[in-house]
Image (cartoon, rainbow, N blue to C red; front, side):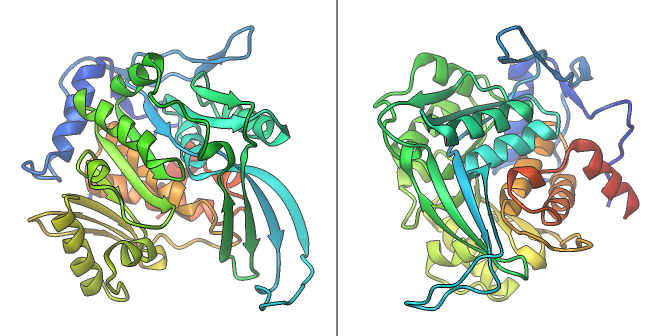
Length: 373
């Protein structure tokens, strides 16, 4: 397999023409097209330049490349580090506690921003300290935040993350502004950025009605959509599923969505076949220590082993890092095998640092790891 090459003086090149690149990415996602035969447009290309900050401290992307747009949740993650989970009725002491910016949507946006791709985040926070924390984290990571809405009638969403000594975590989410106060119909400004995206990322920590609006708007403009299934439990509405190009669960979410076991790769393949029957023609499965795989209906799966981390401190945000990194590579015209490998490297770096957003790697770190393998 051809590896990803990197020069410290040059990023991956991307296309100037938004619609051309949308069509190129969409072609790679078309179920009638061989998923491995992703080709770059022959149009003029240029390096993806960095963001700049104007006098109002609003991030403005200095590029014509179609952006990656994340529509989703923003949480304040309240971390408590414990030796083990408490038993029913038991009180235990935490080793440490801290509050960091997080939420699946914000995580993915930050990861994309740190990977030096033009990124917009569309979401909601409250008028509180947690909202300020998230806003600053997004801005500091190079994310375009003019579509981040502040609401007065709901607090910022937050989550309690119980981090155990082995790096595994259990999470309790309070929706807050993520699940309430959304407009019945998204504004034209929000819909325009979606329709002019190179790719759109969704998750399940905001109302289904919002995700459906976004997915329909993207589909109408030929913009591919990836739905990360993490977040709320329950079935995915058919109206949403039929407007998504790639469904992306981890193995636990895949089991929950299909009601089928996912212990072995054969069982995972059978569960994915159920997703195909439900309308998800392409499925990107995150398998933790077993790696990852892309399944396209009617084709052999494409597998990627895990890239082992030197140490595992915190798995929080690893799935979001993987999804965002895969999406960045895909919209930049890489083959699916390269996308999987790039995402695996990013996730490997993520688990070596505590916290979701603080653990997101930058572009150079990912390429350095890939070059060392």
